[in-house]
Image (cartoon, rainbow, N blue to C red):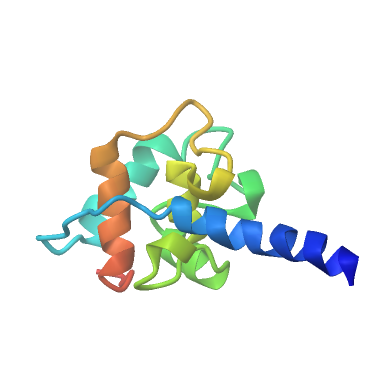
Length: 126
């Protein structure tokens, strides 16, 4: 019974810490377009030589404009309406202690906010 007293806090700690990394309040006034707003972010920062493009993309995730939406959805990288649970959002913000993408450094907040809003708005292919 003594061991339960020590194990229980270890089991609860990750849940408490995950609550600490929730995204700041972001206001999503305008509709974010996948094709007009998100694809350009990928083209500039992700689907570049040696990263998420070509026949052997990093992490097996291609973010070229022709396949990005399908790859994100089928790979479980995006959970529509739930940015905090979306791998894509966590990767570009470093939330939850995951490595930040792109490896060259964190994206500007204006871009991560667009990704956040797109996911919160349902992550549709628009």
